[in-house]
Image 1 (cartoon, rainbow, N blue to C red):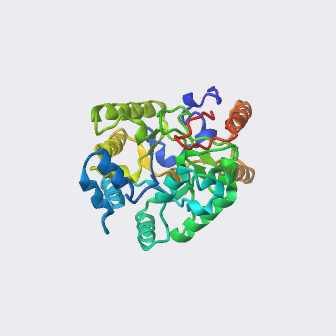
Image 2: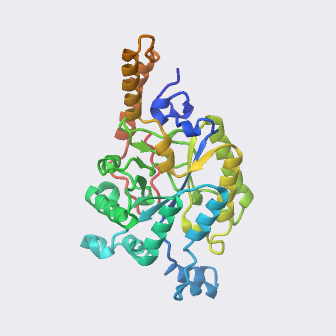
Length: 371
């Protein structure tokens, strides 16, 4: 019997209580979840920085009206549509710096966040949300920098996004991967069904296991982040090295029947400012499909999962069917199931209690382990 405290060794078919056994992916070798954090869709002051850094005055062209090289949504959706896949776009509503407490006004970090903010209610953003929704892409919540421990703020952002989108938001990821001891409680209380913030911008791999997690033992799911593009070797400088790491992750995912998650920021699809990243993403998706992976957004995978409530409903239906049939035979569980369930509950408690008290960061991503 597999040890439920060692999630790195448990495959979907071995432990349905952790990840479910989605019938639509039962024949797939593994799953690859595609996500994009919409942090900076507009290139503004960065144009001046890049012009100085690269000694290239052409970078200043991005400041002209109608020029926006970081608006890469058509390029992304065209690429994915050509491969027959969809992904998730997590939309951010960062606070205006003057909405913060006066003590934050002198903090340069918050001014940087403010300068990159955008309004989801502009005609351009509303049209984008409509296009993504109608095209089958997932639109999720990218909680702002401090929303990870502010339920009221997170509720406001979720409500605003749903109003702009015209439908319910299923899940998302916190900005800068911020998490605290109550972040998942907030997400669950607000009706979000999953979170994808567990991960790092500096490291990649399956450090948090090969499967989704259930910190509460119910339908709420955590999809660990396997790889963020900026953690890989720069494909513009050494594409072979970057691809070698991606290929290694895909091979490990296939060997373990894993649910792998990848994050590519939309602006990195600009081939002038970030050469190699678009090509690397395409190759990642193409190779995953060639290997027999299920590829798509987290919300679609979540809908295909077998959840605890589903199992209870099936058990009740099976019991009723057995009572009504003279020849029916109730399906029985393995005697080890109860012991496994108790061990899983210990594992879930550990996942929650090992979260640090305050892991808000200002210079890098959250990299602490919770598993």
